[in-house]
Every structure is written in C-alpha cells, then in structure tokens.
Image 1 (cartoon, helix red, strand yellow):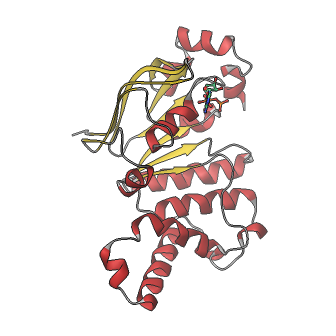
Image 2 (image 1 turned 90 degrees about the vertical axis):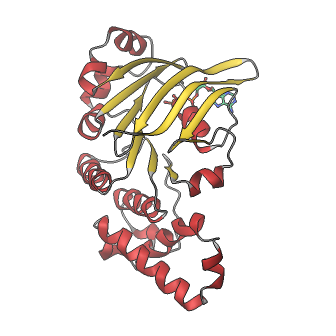
Length: 259
Ligand SMILES: Nc1ncnc2c1ncn2[C@@H]1O[C@H](COP(=O)(O)OP(=O)(O)OP(=O)(O)O)[C@@H](O)[C@H]1O
C-alpha cells in the first residue's frame, strides 16, 4: 500500500511581502519518483529550501514519515533522511572520490556509538560504506582518483554516491542533468533508477523533459509559486494551464521537450 513520506500542506513563503510559494499542497509517497517542474522563477528552488530548512516557512506545514518537521533544524531533517544535491557540483576537488563520499556520512556520525568506537574502526567502517556507495553507483574504478581530474558527468554521479552514503530516505535533486551530454544524462538516469530500486524516494527539479519522462512516475508543476498541475509527464505536458504558463516564460516547454 502506498504511504506518504513527505507531506506538504498549505505551504506559503513570502520574502518582504513578495509571495513566492502560495498555499501549495502535495505529497510524495514512499519509494516514489516525483518531478517538480515549472518556468524560471516559479519557486522550485525555494520549495527545496523550505523542505530542507534553509528558510523558515511563512505558513503551512511539512511532515516527514508522519512527523511534523516544519520548524526542525536542517541537521535534524538530514538525520531524518532528507538529503539534497545541488545544481553546481559541490565536491572537494582535491579529495578522492572515496573521501568525498565519506564526507556524506557526517550527518549520521554524532551518535554515542561513533564517539565510543575506536578511530581505526570508525574509519575502516566509513571506507567500507563509501566503497559500497561507489560500487552501487558503478563508480568503484574511480575510488582513489582526485575528483578534479574526473569528467563532469562522473563528478555528478560521485555527488549522488555521496548523497547515498548519508543513508537517505528522500533525495531532493536540483537540476541533476544540467550541463550533462546525452550519454552522461543517460548514465545518471540509470543510476537514479537503481537508487530508486533500492527503496529511496526521489523528488527532482529538472528542465529536461526527456529526463523527467524517463525518471518520474508523477510530476507536479509550479507557476508563480502556485501548484497548477499534477499527473504523469504526458498529462502535464498536455495540460492547458501548463502550456500557458510556459508560453509566457523564456523557457518553452516544447523546447525543453526537444532538448
Ligand atoms: N532569498 C530570497 N529573497 C527574495 N526573493 C527570493 C529569494 N529567493 C528566491 N526569491 C524569489 O522567489 C522567486 C522564485 O525563485 P526560485 O529560485 O525559487 O525559482 P525557480 O523556480 O527555482 O527558478 P529557476 O528555474 O530559474 O531556478 C523568484 O522571483 C526569486 O527572485
């Protein structure tokens, strides 16, 4: 039976009187792959910032696995399994792929057991977990390479392996396919499908509609901060409100389909 993992209820956000998110309600089910799309300035990044606790909400509530996290700290949200990746690569270029992935484990590393465990044991466990995340992501061959030496598409996938090493329940992906060539985009989509198959829930902001169609079971559309459509990728692409929203923007939905 489907069970909601993330529940957004009547969420609003304004910055100095400007309504950026307006009374938005939606949910993401456990194990689901959902996409959040919309023209430039629609409020997608702001929505991610509200879910991860970067900004306080103005109104409404956010629940994760049934618990109210509306005012929880960003760290507490991460510990509950909400992990985010960014549009721009945020790897440490002078660390190896494995070391970067190990950095992703830090949000779980402050429990009493991590203090009690001998340092050697901690680091060998960390390394094993990093190796596992790299292996699941098909990246083990890059384990000991410095990340700045690696192609952009591989760096993106290492970021995802790092996200995976934080043992997420929900990964928020901010334009993961941006800047990738078609074959890199394909590899990334496959990696995300594998991650999804392991039980992780995905919420993806993306402009590339081919990618959205391949990856997402359900799509929601924001425009000027309001939710204007929800359905499969094919359904929202033919929705009159969505077509009109993109018509007025500098990014046409048809162009995004063509990319
Ligand atoms: N910290 C802030 N202070 C004031 N206004 C903001 C702030 N953050 C975002 N906004 C405004 O909120 C609106 C939505 O921005 P947001 O970045 O969430 O849109 P987006 O859908 O992610 O756009 P894009 O596709 O271009 O990344 C924009 O008008 C933006 O200028």
